[in-house]
Structures are given as structure tokens and as C-alpha cells.
Length: 268
Image (cartoon, rainbow, N blue to C red; front, top):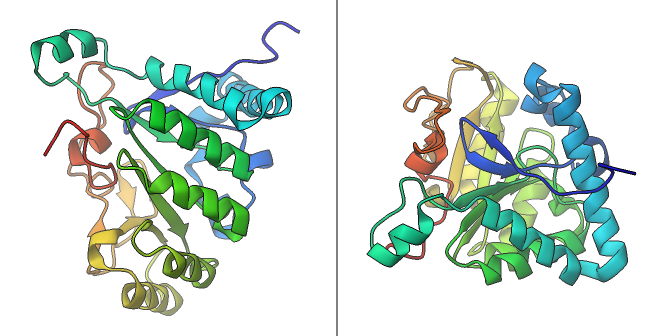
């Protein structure tokens, strides 16, 4: 039974600290496009250790929900958030200066919210740690009860939530956005330009304000498809404006860019 349960974060060179779970069990809103193009298909995400970590995280989430509901899961998620706290956080707080890197956590860099209780547990945890900024991209808006809880989570000032759209799910995603236009942002997975892809982006732009729209051209390493012209923002990291950073005490691209992150509570 040793190692069967436990929650663990992952650190990567793009976002910093992140939490992930098994895709097979959690990606309830996955489209064929995202299954095919997901960066979880990459070699480093397929290693035995990485796969086991995500499976263990998913298994532990299920176990904690069964034993004590969202409240027990939230207590354990708070410990995860604390693990993402910068090493100089206490000294910086006492001195009234900024930490070397922001206190941030990307939720579900692999996997997604598969139950309303999971989103609610993250809401409970985020409330207890308002100084940490969290962000997520989700296709689980296909389930109405999950959408409600994701909206609750995304309403928090230290959380930003994106509805993740592609050419297969964008019509349903826009309906979800129109239910909560002041809460959610929209992330578009943009494939190689084609009439259907261009039509998708035009329809999204008719509904989503430019300040709430981020486009991610499909990419692998330094190579990406030709970005379409958009009123929104094309991910600067995909375009090569930020280098990947492995050093733990340097800001990662997402932390420096902050297009997708909520503003830290300590900033005006």
C-alpha cells in the first residue's frame, strides 16, 4: 500500500508549480482535437514516474472526497498551495518587499476537473490562501454542475479561470461563457489556419471581449502554426517572447507574462 496515496505538485519551466491528474479519468470534456494535440502526449509526460504521479493524485482526490467530502480535500489542497510558496516568502513579507518569484499555482496542467466537488474544494482552498494566485483552463464546462462550481472558483480575486475552446467544442463553450461573461476568460487552441478554424475565431470574437481572449497556436517546442490575426492576445510564450526557465528562483514565462494570471493581491 506504500505510495498508493498522496498529493504532489509538479514544477515545469513554463508555469512554475502546477497540479496535475490522470487525463484518462479526469478529462470528461476532452475533444478529439485536444486528445490528439495535448502536450501530455509529449515524451516527458509519458515517463513512468510522471504517469504514476498523476494517477496517484487522481486516486487520492477520489479517496479524500469519499472520506470527508470537499472539506477534507480542501484541507489537503491547502498544503499543496503552501508547497508552492516561494522560499523567500516569509522574509519578503516581513520586510515589505516582493518575493523573487510570484506565489502562483497552475491547476490541472494535465487533466481537468471531473466532479463539481473538486472545483468546490479548490474554492475552499483558494479562500484560505488569498495571497497565492491560481489559474486554470477547463473543458469540463460540458457538465452544468461543474460549470457552476468552476464559476464560483473563478470569481475569487486570486483565481482566473479559462474556458478552453477548440474547433469541436467552441459553440458549447460560448454558451457557457455567455452564462458567466464577467467571470470567465476564454483560451482558444488554434490549429493550422483553415476556413473552419478562421470561422471559429471570428465567431468567438463576436462574443468574447478582447481583454478576455487568449489564443494559443498549436505548438511543439519552438515550432508553432501560423497565428491568426485576433483582437485578443496570442500567447507570448508560444511566439518565443519568453524563454523557458529551469532555475527555481527565477520567474517562469507565465509568471513574467501574467496574461493568464490574476493580479497578485499585494499589487494595486
